Amino acid sequence: MTIAPLRREVLVDADRTLAFAVFTQRIGAWWPVDVHSVHGAGATVVFDAEEVGGRLVESKAGADDAVWGTVTRWEPVDAVAFTWHPGQGPERASQVSVTFEDSGGKTLVRLEHTGWEAFGERAQEAREEYDHGWPVVLDAYAALAAA
Image 1 (cartoon, rainbow, N blue to C red):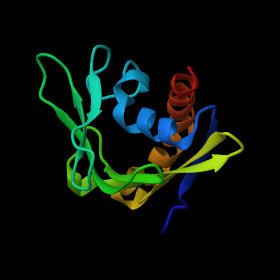
Image 2 (image 1 turned 180 degrees about the vertical axis):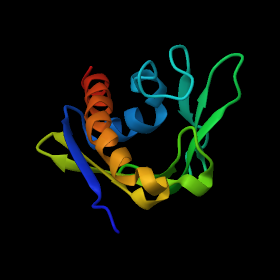
Image 3 (image 1 turned 180 degrees about the horizontal axis):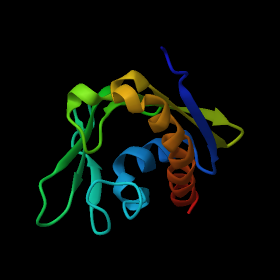
Image 4 (image 1 turned 90 degrees about the vertical axis):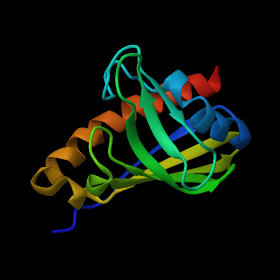
């Protein structure tokens, strides 16, 4: 059974250059690690390289790094995409794609999360959890980008 992609969007009060930079270069400043991470409070999140093949990594003192995914598309200021498997191995990866579009002096940021089959028997449950989680994450991102 194929599960429909999860799509979310947020209008960010910033131009595309800033919106892309905040999403990628400052992810550790806006990602809510207290509630959406492997290691919890005190962890940091970074894209370890700004290119295809770079990784999205969570770090915390005293803990092993948690690789959340690998960049599959890097097109500043238009799009970034990555495999997605926080707390899991790459064989359990879904995919996330984020695009940045001009919208009257602001930026429309669209996120699409696919590949739910990677979650196995928990696929529908995982999609429902992310259906609630992505809005929290994107709201935090939009707030920092506008600041």
